[in-house]
Length: 143
Length: 100
Image (cartoon, rainbow over all chains, first blue to last red; front, side, top):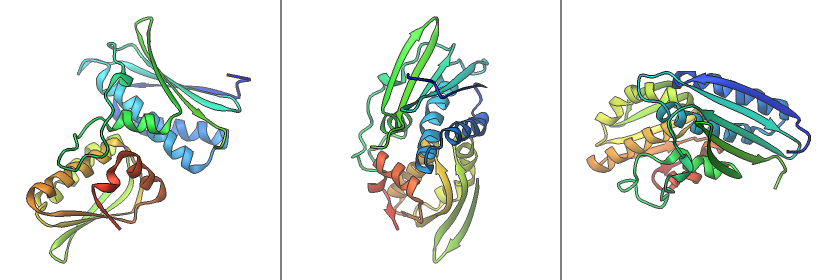
């Protein structure tokens, strides 16, 4: 990252009902950066998918845990770091869905990580200090 | 998220209004039960007021599409906005539905 222009974070419990708070956070980040509406929506979608994944799978059912979302941006790119203290879970290890299959053949899951990969420019995962850390980058330079 | 369902010309018409994010999709699953029960008919989803959809919402659409495929019905999706159209392209959903 060059000179950091924006840095904000949000911590949510593992409860999908808090997703509207996440959407609000993403809207604020995007507004501060002055990105276009199409990017606002795609960032909302990619980050919602990543965070809901953590809320749904990182912690055992019935146990409470947090997910932390950090947004950092410079002039060139917007980066989201999504971390949790749950069990090791690498969403990037998931097999790519086959989007050419018919409705009958299409499995019902796997769309979340597929959308994240489609929207973001890079996605990487690391396990560090008992944390799952997912790093998502989006270039802010128009193609 | 509000889903208004009506009978129309022997089929079903559903008007989707709002954001179909993860929590909304959990609730919408129950709201869409009458559509699943009528999966032998033509079901039109009018998305002119649908602002946003995440994978949880897409899964509901796919489940309905699978049910109609099994029972002989059809799903028609109308008036999706440009951003949701992009999401349909990214996921290959464009080829799964009749999109008007």
